[in-house]
Image (cartoon, rainbow, N blue to C red; front, top):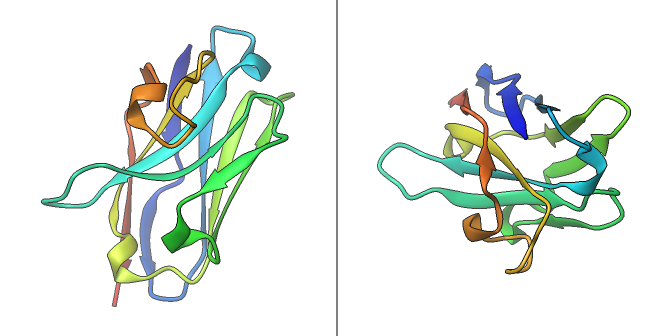
Length: 124
């Protein structure tokens, strides 16, 4: 599966942003999709993930109140809605997919296909 993440940009503290992850080349509904992010100088971390059907969703504890993941399989797209953005949300956001989840949907090891990343910058 090929993935393309887009929707990043420069926003101010408190703004909202929706990232999209568009997939091609496969039966998308059989793939779980995860969002991860990497801030400057830090390791990549889990943000959110969703099962192929969309029936189960997982969000990192630190973002549960502000980030929502969803998908539209008719459009082969997964979304990450982010509200009340903070400067510490500044990072490159990556989407990833796989159809064989073994580690609980929160580990990078679960996902073999990765998009190129989209930069989100939140100014204070």
